[in-house]
Image (cartoon, rainbow, N blue to C red):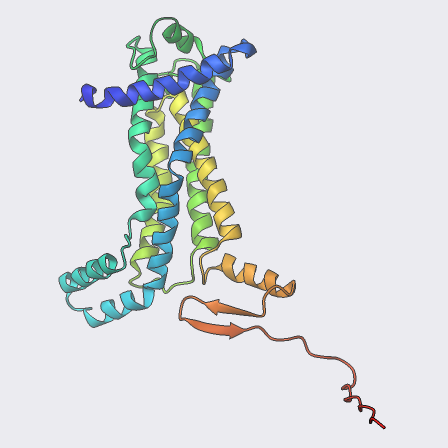
Amino acid sequence: MSEILNPLYTAVSWVLITFHDLLNFTNNEDLQWSVGIIALVILIRIILIPLFVKQIKSQRALTALQPHMKAIQKKYKDDRQKQSEEMMKLYKEHKTNPLASCFPILAQAPIFFALFWVLNGISQNKPHGLLKGEYLVSAQEASFFGAPLSDTFLGADVTSTKIIAIALIIFMSATTFTTQRQLMVKGMPKMDSSNNMMLQQQKIMLYLFPIIFAVTGVNFPIGVLIYWSTTNLWTWGQQYYVIKRNPTPGSPAYEELQKKRAAKGLLDEKSNDQDGTTIVENQPEQTGQRKQPKKKKKRR
């Protein structure tokens, strides 16, 4: 197992060491290692942007398929197996996946575990990857607001470290919840909640992930808590930008954007992508008397 993870240990530790060395001019070991973890998040999330785009496309494709999905559910309401088969066939035909929203999290999982073991090895004096020698000693002494980066809530003996860990766990869980809620409230079209697989999946994620992070977070090193809190902030900002600038058709954010464009006179008609119809915006009523047509002067 370690042979499989060694390349990841090397990659993670290389990023941490590289940014540690780049910030040597600060003469602040705590800052150097903490920024290294944040830089790891930024690097990974930039690499995952194509996957995020694929996630958005898949979610919008599922939105467009809602009428077909409801028809299948109605047709095979008494045959769950046939209903599932037809759903899978529909997803395959339109090249979409109902689990696409989980892809960015699943893609980060290997990096997450690699960072966990690299930081865990610091406290146990068991180096992983390139984090050896003087770098290992330096990382062992590094802290975040006085809490060693390799300490966990359960493993810490110092009260201040436990307080920092709890604060980060609460922040990590809260940002997970608000990010998912932002998507459901602003970024998703209004749907009938009954027998809606996509909406049910989103509701499960809304409550399940924060609980998982809150329960398991007590075993995460401080550095891992910093990593996941930072990636949550990135996700929230990235999602906010997409919802604001390019919202899903039929969503509250889409309707709000259309109203703003119409108010500015940038929109005369809009397409309703949910049912394929075109809605023409009401034109402002003219006030005052009707202008009479001017008579043209006759040529002599």
